[in-house]
Length: 495
Image (cartoon, rainbow, N blue to C red; front, side, top):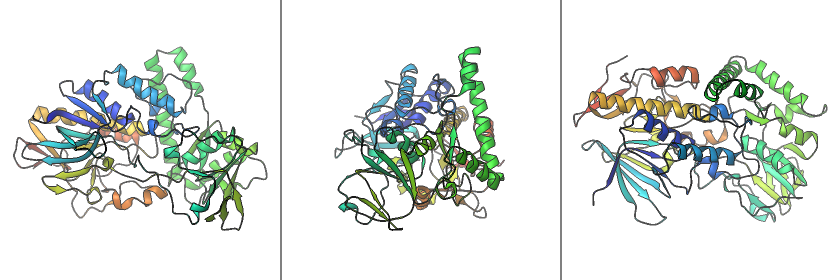
């Protein structure tokens, strides 16, 4: 029996995968599309994470799809609402029959002779993979391991008599009501967990080795509420989305161009929300500049409220060892806990962990150069969706999906069966693919591709500039080679 063949195979049914499938059906209506999802329902990250208070840290007008307006008033939405929004989008756009759940891609091999991918798919652990083929493979698998969060090797952790949990695998039976809780970490997950758990816990201590920038933003978008009543739904959405994109871009650029001023403003805003004697420098003023790591946003200052009401506290110190009753710190202080939550980050993994092979040659993504932050040098007909680190994830993923549609239509119009990104000239320096100093990124640099210093091998993370490139920029630039039929790759004319 011949292998099943589709024109475009999408891997992942989260925000990026569902959005890409919608784009392909609209912009490439003649193409057959299948979406493979390892989980048992749509949602991706928003199905995986189920810890207390889980929510977006980007506004929903930009995290949501531009073709399906977010209609609720909350600017930062809870995780289950986001998952239902993704599921409703899939249902309304007729994707339910295209998505196959419980399908994990374990290997993909490209054949230049056949101009197609052979994709091995595992439908149950330990079973023999089935095979599909496709002309184009689009990976929307995120950037981390779903099966294993990052957990440091702390001394004495086996001695702790209470419960140690990781937010990525939250136990459904955990009841923290009336208990002493320690949340280890200072990132987006930690600042979300602390106020949520503090609602019913006896007390929550946020234990951080070093602080993050934390900024309070309104939980409801008042402008969006007014415009949604005054304008047609899609027009109101477009205006609010444009407003939010502009504000995000301006705030980020201001932080990069004037880091000292931005640091001072963030510190002053935090101080206004805390008791007058609170040590803001120690607990809320990092050593690094704003946006060298992600800035944490909290709706309506909920973290600051929990601290002000003394339902929660922050301790900035290093862990010396776990004890039977909690954690002993480098300062000698011992923190007692019934529950310890290790909000210590992710294990980064690109391309969903699938083995990628091109004409018999295994591909190591770390040895490749990114092309337009969506393809890899030397890897034909494969794209991937990685969102912004300084703005909403979906903004970038949607640009990539639009570009993918343009690229496929361009290839059809010119009789090309294969497109292969090229590495830049060796005289061009390379820089990290993700230029954050966050621990999870620094731990993973050896696993990630690099990028060049000039377009099209360098993307600067500016949505307004990227929008011009992905939606209207040239497809036949110097960084890609097109192959008609089975001929050898032919580089495009230079820009």
